[in-house]
Each structure stands twice: as C-alpha cells, then as structure tokens.
Length: 123
Image 1: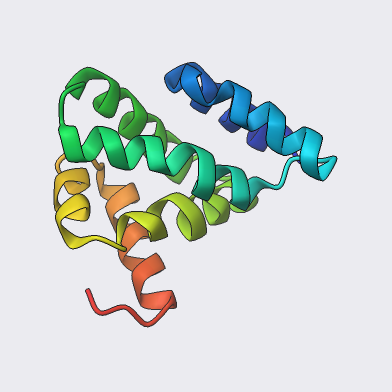
Image 2: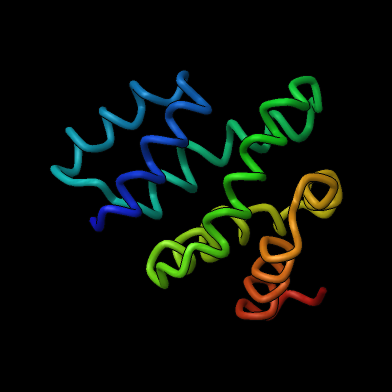
C-alpha cells in the first residue's frame, strides 16, 4: 500500500470512526489491507447510510470534498482505487447517486461517470 493510500484510509477512519474496529478486524483476518474490500464492505455502507438519511450534511460535505481532492491528487493508484470502489458503488442505486451528486465536485463526478461506463452501466 502506498503512502497516499495509507493517508486515504486514515482519513476515512477519521471521517467514520465507527469503521475502525471492522478495518482492524479485516487486516487481522486477511493479514493485510485489502483496499477494495475495505472500501466496498466497510466504508461505503456507512457512506450510503449517510446519503440515504441525509442527516449529517457537514460530514457528507467533508467526505465528498476529500473525494474531490483525491480525484485530482495525481496518484494514479489512489484515483483508480476510488473510482473502481467508492464511485462505482454509488452508481448501484440511482437515488443514492442522485443524492451523492449534490456533494460531488466536477472531478469526482467525471470519475463516477467513467466508472459506470467502464462496467457497462448507462449514464
């Protein structure tokens, strides 16, 4: 895992402290950080819940501001990781995606569209 990825995981746990135990348990179970598994199975359910409830707007804004920062960070691995995990998951439910789009910046929006196209989902 590169430095940018490590920073990403630290930030996500800062945003979503309730995921820390599951994050650590995943590492203990698999003996390493399985990046896509952790994002898809640990972080994204919490983000989806926040989006469906829309009760913590400030946190959603901070998370999506960070996603925008990642989307433009220049680290190809981290950008790809965000795209094929978090942004792809958002496209699984059109109502969740519509809510998420309210918080997405232009780079994140473009990556999400590309993620949908890459898996053959119409946009």
